[in-house]
Amino acid sequence: MATTDPVLQGNVLLDIDGVGVVANFNAVSGISSEVEIVDNPYVTEQGKVYIGKLPGKPKTPTITLKRGLTGASELWDWHLAVMQGTPDRRNGSVILMNTVGEEVLRYNFTNGMVSKISLSEGGATASGVQIEEATISCELLVKG
Image 1 (cartoon, rainbow, N blue to C red):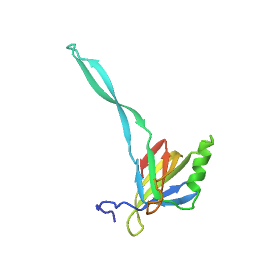
Image 2: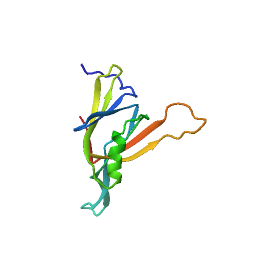
Image 3: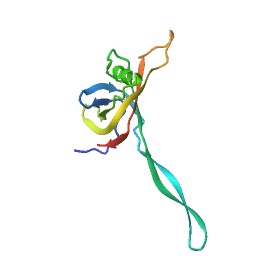
Image 4: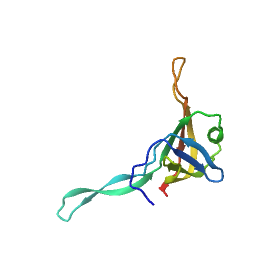
């Protein structure tokens, strides 16, 4: 049964086609859909100039996922292949789960590549979990 309750943050899975669920994340951003709007000037029959608006190119999404650093290397290996010039494009899904581990929403991406991996700032006086951040640049994102 569908719920109208808001989806809580903190339980996000990354499912890569052909591999399966590769990681559990506690934060996701960049799930967006955007289209450029372009100006379309035209002249009316009365000679007045108006600027209309038309849809332009869709913007490609960039998904950012964050999790506590682990020893898992799937994302690093994927990124390394891209960094070495191999266009390792993969399809997959970002899956939002509820607190009892049930899927609530799924966003499917097409032709994604891990374009960036970074670690949170830390130091000798820092405490807490080291955070790994992975950025996936993709060509298409659809809510599924």
